[in-house]
Length: 208
Image (tube, rainbow, N blue to C red; front, side, top):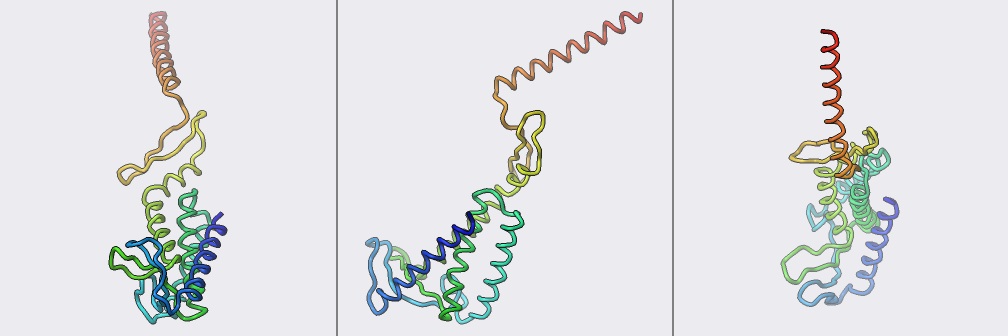
């Protein structure tokens, strides 16, 4: 799944960039949403949102390193669950999209210009890379421990073991038992304790 997601992002990024090169270069652009978004053609020899311009070698080395780490995390299974996999795949797709442009041309093509606020021009790869990193951060903070415990802890007594991340700590909880079943189980356990106590009392009485 991760390969398909990343490949789809790279393909979409490539298509939009080539469209901007062939159809928008030398024009005033095309308004997609009046007052909100416009398609133009511009180039960027920096990182996402035009940061650190002119550092192509640095960006290529950093991109390769990040991609290797991301692929390692996916293959090893460190990132698991659909949310984590989709988030990391979006990061990989965005990084590869801009990486191809840097190797191919020495710069990346940007085309999305916001009209309602002053904001750097960006592209498809930038969008998925940024959103993927944000989602990955959310996954690490709130979902990673739950996914790990869900796979590591076995079922106990017919109950599915899961985990909840509350207040920065992980609490193991049992899932799968209906409330009425839980109440019946609790009542049965209480009755067993009473009978056990009675049997012990009778035993002491017989001894006397």
